[in-house]
Length: 614
Image (spheres, rainbow, N blue to C red):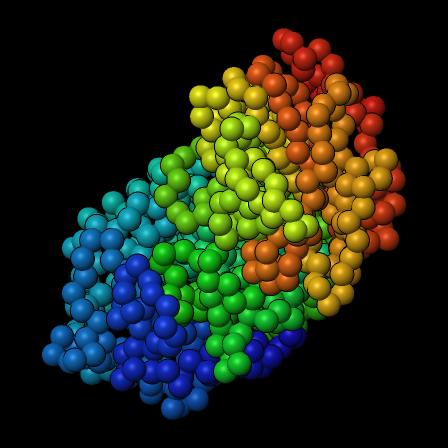
């Protein structure tokens, strides 16, 4: 991936299969799964998301493809056509699809727009202007009004600015600091900052470079770049965290926008490396079906991890990366040779999203204090509240809530009273087990320092905890203060690792702790609690198709502890890495940890460093 021709070839390779699925002129749809806004609107999504790449490449794609796009827009905006995209309503998914279509009209000196008659142009503009008559969701959706407004203005269409100015103000309400945005008052800080807020902000700054807000957006983009680089590892993988992960390599669309906006030009070779490594990482995975279509899922086709707003065509949001195709042929990006990531510090605090990045021998882990807020997206506990998220091992999602094998609670602490039980079959024998563990699902009293992140969480009146997460030389130390009013069970886990039945690894309990070692990597968990506890190994094999990175059965190291009523302190260490030899060396040298002065101010001594835990 060096030249503009290379990127164009990749765009066409990924998107040409979609052309077999036009439904008439103005919709592209395939598949049989449902979506919250219905498959008719999903067909509009399929049409528009091609344009995130085809728009920037409009003069580079074939004449036939150009014609399809031109006629599709014309039919979709014609109220007298059976293919009309329709009248909007408040918080309408069609608003999401408008910017890609609008920007396509603007690229290459209005190349596409100029092919329409004046009457056709007015028809198209009329359809777009609907967005100003309806409510957009608070959050990144406000940028849809901003982008559509600026496109129409640049095309010579008169549009009242009242709604546009209100949208700009609402975007400001979402801004936090360090380049991060919160996706509405009830939203969180996640990938919507890079591939939505920041992406659109940079686009705005190119559309209206002299606007006061443009300088602000560009400054925020550079601030955010210095944060977001900590989501990546040396292989190109980005850490999966939060919702909308089925957009896959849209995670690096922010970097494409940085190049397009000429922000951080001195880092163009670094950015090219981030983009190219990420693309190579994705293209080595089974994310396409046999006909070449992108699937719903993450590392493979996996429907259970998706959102209610994900249709079969939703993954093509990833085409945002191909904004690069709008760059001129002599741009520095095409001449640059990609370079490796800069040397990363061992740890780096990302204060706004309450994450503490840990970089160890090519493995990036985000330790997570959790973000306060309501749970209203699918699998919020798994996507936002695990203790750690990994660039190598991702995270897992449940297929049920009974057996540990189906909940696959990696990087979590589950709590439950001993009277909540089930009968399980183990080795052909029936066994009574505690089940339906409660995990962290909301947080209060979040604390973050350069040494640790922490939060308090309560699952019910009987079970509550405060958890501190401390990175030490690639290890994660977890300190839990757990308060229980009834005899309870605590079940804690490390990272889940693929353990294919075709080439199985080993589960081992030694004098240090419990670990799994196999072809896909190493993962272990160690009890460092000084006080004696009634604790057992609880390593399990999680069901296939539960981990985001692998469809295989996964090995998940764990420990289970019985807690009597009262306050308990648990100290745990977790280590994982894909390089088994390196990981086993690390395993032989677990951190030496001492927890002192539990009341009133706990102090942790680790690696000869004294850390006050607040």
